[in-house]
Image 1: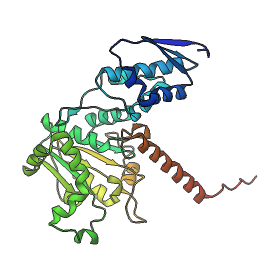
Image 2: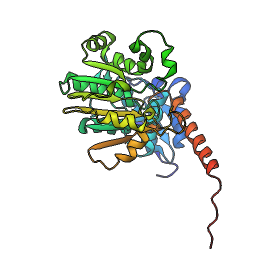
Image 3: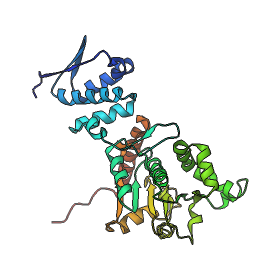
Image 4: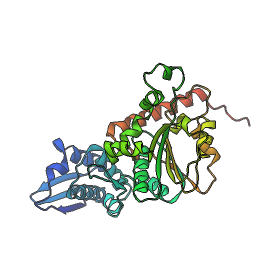
Length: 332
């Protein structure tokens, strides 16, 4: 396409250009800047001019499609749509046939929102053991819990077991008030939050009382064999090699396992190798096990979270390069 070529989008009276362009036209400005185009709105049509007009058109049509389905536009969604359009991909085509995983207790459908999440969910459906590795906000735990609830409702499993390592379960745990369960509950709160969001607090607590759902610290898994269960290990980067091996060997017949973690947020004492990093290397060639890597493009929290993750990654990369020092010249 040449610099002067234009694309026209016809608008219907039902389409809300204010919602499309965003507050103070922030969505419009972002698209114009990203694709190097200019946009003119005339009555019931939008004219897009510039070398990347077709990609900008694709982004606008995707955003209009999102609005037509009753969804709202936020900065993260707009950025994701533009990222896909930049690669010649369409949000509409990707999402139009995307399955609903489950519904929240308020009736909101839960779907994979990014290509990385879709691949992750697909592997959970097909494999007995799946590792979901990626930064905060990529939906690793939430989607795993949604898949577990789906499997329980479909009678594919009889129990859901959610486990997490209590990294500070040493001296500090002893100073916390209450019995052992009350002491470890603060470490398990993110798992409870996901359960309550999907099932509702009352239903989740009722199933917990019946032991259909267990939310336990990783140490409780030792010595057990778990049949017909959907088992999730969260924050797996904080397991030791021995703990990871112990957990993976708890799997029984008819069970499925999802292990989630973020290798950039390891809280183990210095010198301790993360069981997640070790397992990724050891199990890489086991064809029945899927290892899914979610990236900052899969972050579905506030767009600032993605920027924070990127800034930390760049800082850690530069720090590692400084520690390695300059590469010595090869001798001739």
